[in-house]
Length: 316
Ligand SMILES: NC(=O)C1=CN([C@@H]2O[C@H](COP(=O)(O)OP(=O)(O)OC[C@H]3O[C@@H](n4cnc5c(N)ncnc54)[C@H](OP(=O)(O)O)[C@@H]3O)[C@@H](O)[C@H]2O)C=CC1
Ligand SMILES: C[C@H]1O[C@H](OP(=O)(O)OP(=O)(O)OC[C@H]2O[C@@H](n3cnc4c(=O)[nH]c(N)nc43)[C@H](O)[C@@H]2O)[C@@H](O)[C@@H](O)C1=O
Image (cartoon, rainbow, N blue to C red; front, side, top):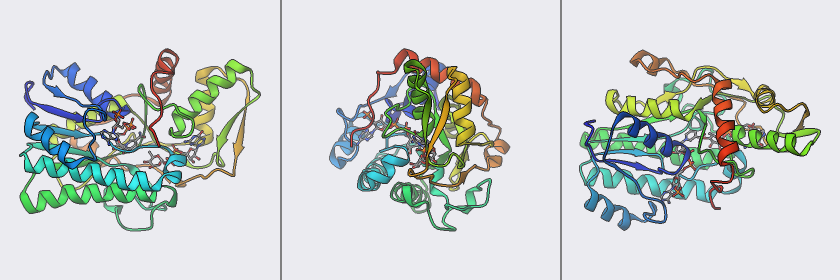
C-alpha cells in the first residue's frame, strides 16, 4: 500500500483495530479513515454505502464485529449471529460496489470443528461440528469468509480472510462477563492480590488448551497479509504453541505477584477442548509472531494498571 493510500480501519477503537492503526501510523501511513459506532453504525446499510461513496477508501481492514468470550457468546447468540452477519454484508458489499482495491476480513479460530485434529490446518474448515457455545458467532464468521470468496470468484475482487487465534494485549476488554479468558484472569488475579483474597475463580476445569497471540503481532500480520497475500484460503495467524487454562492462570499469578490459590468452577463451560492453529502457511510466506507469552502478559498488565477503567465492555 502506498503511504498516502486511503485506508479504512473498521473497529478502530477495539483491541485489534486500535493495534492496526498503531502499526499503520508507525509505518508512516497518513490517510487512515476511522469512524466510531456512534458515527457510523455498520449494521446500517445506507449509512455504510454513503460513507464509502463520500470517503472512497482504497484498502479496508474489517476489525469491527460483535466480539466476546465464552459467556457472552453463549448468552447473546442473536447478537453474535445477526450483528456480525449485518456488518459483514454491508462492509464487504460496499467494498465491492465502491471498487476497493483490497479488503482483509478477520475471522476467528472458532470457525474450525470442535474436535479438529491439532494443530488445526486451514483445510479443516467445514469438516465437522462446531463448538456449541460459539456456534452462532462461528457461523457468522464462516459466512463472512464465504462472502469474501464469492466476491473473489464472481468478480475477481482482491478480498482476503485471516483467522487469528485467541488474542490479548493493550486495549482488551476487561469486563468480567464479556471478556476473554486472559483479560478476565489478569483482572481477577490483580483484584485478588489487592483485596488479599485467598483464591482466584477460574471458569471450567482448567484443562482446555488455548493459543494466545499478542495483538501487536496480529497487527503486523494484517499489514503483511495486505501486502503479500491474495488467495481464497483463509490464512491462520497464531504463534504455534498453546497452554492449558490452568497453566495460563499460574503464569498470570506469577506476573501479577499473587500467592493465592486457583478455584476452578466446573459449572462454567470449558468450550473447545483445544484450539491450536497450524501456522505453517503464514510461516512459509515469511511472517512469524515475535512476542513471547510471558512478555506479552507483562506488557498487558502494565497497560491494565494504567488504563483499567478506560474501556467498558461491549453493550448487550
Ligand atoms: N479478541 C479476540 O480474541 C479475537 C478477535 N478476533 C476478531 O478480530 C476482530 C476484532 O476483534 P476485537 O478487536 O477483539 O473486538 P473489540 O470488541 O475489541 O472491537 C470491536 C470493534 O467493533 C466495533 N463495532 C462493533 N459493532 C459495530 C457496529 N455495529 N458498527 C460499527 N462498529 C462496530 C466497535 O466499535 P466501538 O468501539 O465504536 O463500539 C469496536 O471498535 C473481530 O472480527 C473478531 O472476530 C478473532 C480472533 C480472536
Ligand atoms: C476468541 C474466541 O473466544 C471464545 O472462545 P474461548 O476460547 O472458549 O473463549 P474464552 O477466552 O472466553 O475462554 C477460554 C477458556 O477459558 C476459560 N476461562 C476460565 N476462566 C475464565 C474467565 O474468567 N473468563 C473467561 N472468558 N473464560 C475463562 C473458559 O471457560 C474457556 O475454557 C469464543 O467466544 C469464540 O467466539 C472466539 O473466537
